[in-house]
Image (spheres, rainbow, N blue to C red):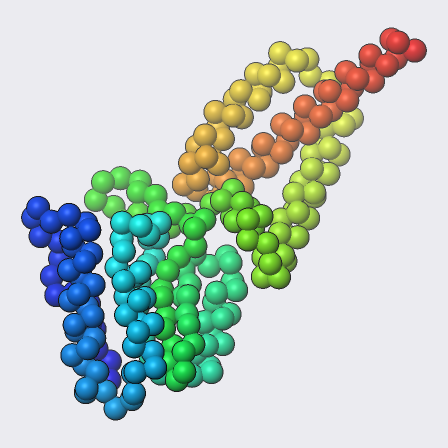
Length: 236
């Protein structure tokens, strides 16, 4: 049997979020309890855990506003479904995935989204686009270091190292820019970063932004290295 047990009505005028959530939890729980006698399966082992997850799922005020929060699902356990959910959860490049619990003969599935994915609305009336933030993704990997995040962390480290090497190979034999030009270039890049990285509304823009940012860092490194070398030559 497949049935929806969500709240019976939306937010009413003058109702606070706290009151709405309390009413929604009560309505949803009552809807759940109403169908329990009609189920052929025994829901008793998982019922209390599912009721707690209903409360969490309906807590819009304290959730991080994940744009892909979908259904909260209770379904009979199957090994194939658990393997599928596990693979989807391990794919960190996917903005949407499902948290799940295996309790007895049941799966509790909480459809949600990654903290480094956001929505960006380009104009009023248009559906917002889902944006993958490379910067937030890096900080997520650093803050959640595990065997799952390790391959992604290593891959980003290798890509970053290759970009640094490529910029150094491109810059090292070119004439040194004076400090005023480097500062001006850095200021222009910084303004561009406000839109390309800090406000990541375009994935290719983020890539261009990060490549440019690393290039400026390498440029400053060359400038400071040459400046230090010239100072040592004068002292010598």
